[in-house]
Length: 402
Image (cartoon, rainbow, N blue to C red; front, side, top):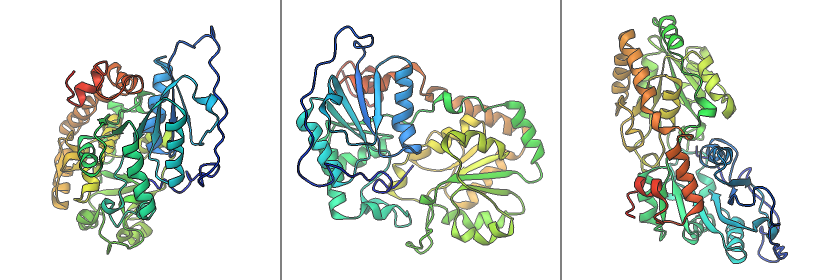
């Protein structure tokens, strides 16, 4: 989910340089228009990729569909103050540039709305691994300072996990930090688990199980900035040793160490699918199991467990790197040898394999975005300030006493 905020999301306009900003006077909303009694909130996005959907767009869609409120999203720095009439909360995603900082200052000066800063990955350059190809977007002193200023300037931050909350508590002066985990939208992925299909897939691939790694290039040292050491270094030898035992499949990114085996066809590589097509694409690849290795660093400790959630929603067993990121997973490993042992254990009999498919799928029953207590967390986030007793679900999750 880690992307460059200064790439395609870079903006121009009155906030690109200090100076004049368009400031027409707001007007009051017209009375007696149907829907005027529904609260209205705004999102400003950094992207329309996975990050934007998981953290902003899917919650917005569900909130709007359940008529909790009306949320509108934009990537444009809107300066017409009529747009903010009646808006009590504005949530901004991974804003980083000095121009974006000036825009938040504009919002603070000219609106009465609470401003919430959303972040789903560590974005301080000193703690982004050197192998991450997007690190350079966060290393300038100006960008680094702008990010921290905005985090501290906002009324609240939202993050994906307790580890990330602790990280920003220690490195910023922001104390109003709220954990809202990534919740799976049923509307996206809850139609792909078919036990009969899982059973047939196991039988089809019993001689050479198909093992998937799905991840972007952000996990690999593709620019050789870190001597080839990245999230898969500790398992690469085990992958190479087992190319005849397993059919390894890579989706999205690929390690440079495996280029030869990919070119020869011994390892499959498939380009990344559009987000909405991802569940069907993985299903069509007829995958038997998945793996989720990670290097041991603070950046990865603060990542969310999306790979486990996706695999379990599809009914595909997954073995995950041991650590706080995947504490929900029962099948974990530390070394490459342990990863292979875990795969062999999952695949040893069809009965065990199917029981793990069922177990993992059941383990995410409380992680669907449409579940009432999950969507109500977003309802509480937008409607009530940090620590408010009305935030029943949020406060319980974050251990805030009412």
